[in-house]
Image 1: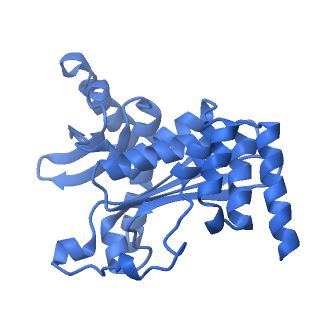
Image 2: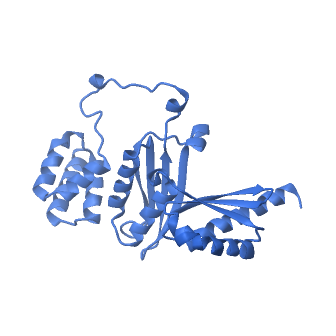
Length: 274
């Protein structure tokens, strides 16, 4: 067998093993595995958020796993090691699965994504990005992106420092894709570089304003009168796209006629002025 075919076969077996653990332990928070060849045989390290569900009481399930790996995958005398994920919030696979399960259970994708993004950043990540694609509302598919902190999208640091995962939620309108990217540390921190500093005093009025997901959720969750007051406070910084984004959130969540009428009136006024 050629070297190329050996690599292909190893890759196929690794993917089959990943699928097996995903199906076998759906509630264990399985996130990945490593296969190492040793003089004694094969050592398989399983990484999971809840290793106890894989090991079983008194380690009883390890023998079952060993038998299945020998029978179904042809591993000779596999040695199983189960490791717990110390910081599940910084594992892209676990977070993507959490969002997927919540969407399949009928939760609002914006609330779920915003909550997960917040927990990732609070756990100490340098940055995170969540993309949700599919028929989120209405007949047409689209992509919503939630981002916070620092994120590298290309180059060697992106390959080395960014953890990525993709999951697919099955819903009645169709399949919804969930992609999570987590950057645990900045390259500058690792190599002792310096960050660029922005002088706040030089900012022009409204230039530093950003309509965040958290701010939109705050507006939509409050009463209509409080929501209007919150909008009036930042009105000079809002354009047509910002109003449309708030309207999308309102139509997906609360569906209050008074609030939707107020937002549509704002959008119509801006369109006429243009």
